[in-house]
Length: 301
Image: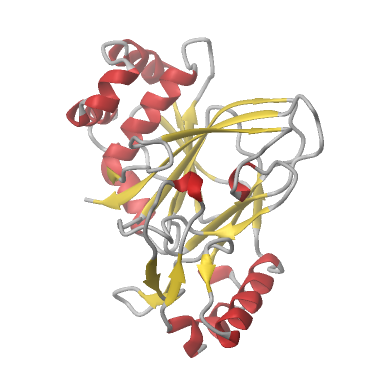
């Protein structure tokens, strides 16, 4: 494993493709001091301040972290890491974690505007009761494997999800699947229907007033499969497309190679959005259930 100042780096216990990164307590304390100069309004209104947060983080690792994170995400053999402070204290509160998430993502690239939240990041809750129009907040239903950005015009190369808070939670584990580990990838990638343009839309809560067209599968520069898919938002044009999507969904959810992992509070999972799919298992019923997440997604620079 790579040695970088201020970090503890190891292989994830659930998958050799996922890298675990712990930010040592000394670095976290230094970051907390530096981050105090920037409130959330500042980073929301002044885009250049977000890069300042990122530079503070990179400087504290001898400017090695930015290259390392990009190397992980662009490498087909890995493409995913989980990063968190070594210790969580009162100083690593929700405000700090939003700023840390901002810093990490701005070392990777440029976040997209999140129309649902009206800013470059979204904070959302999962609770016992829900009246939303998306699986995202449905606590007691599996959030099936998918990629992000399927229904927008912006390039979505990567995705970050940070767990801010969690109470009275059982279940709700993160589910991940790398395309190269998926038993049915070759079969479905080679199906010509998967290369046809599909129409993709979104519910009202996403605040997107247009539809896009693109295939489910496409190739990267080396000819390897990439995917852009979510089960809730395609509008099949005919029976063949509808049957293909059903077969795709069944094959993804039935995979024996899904990675199921518990993301600790204060941790962020970051993945390449074109060869990693992600989802979430259902929670166990609890009227006091509460989870808050931060989502940031964007493109490589």
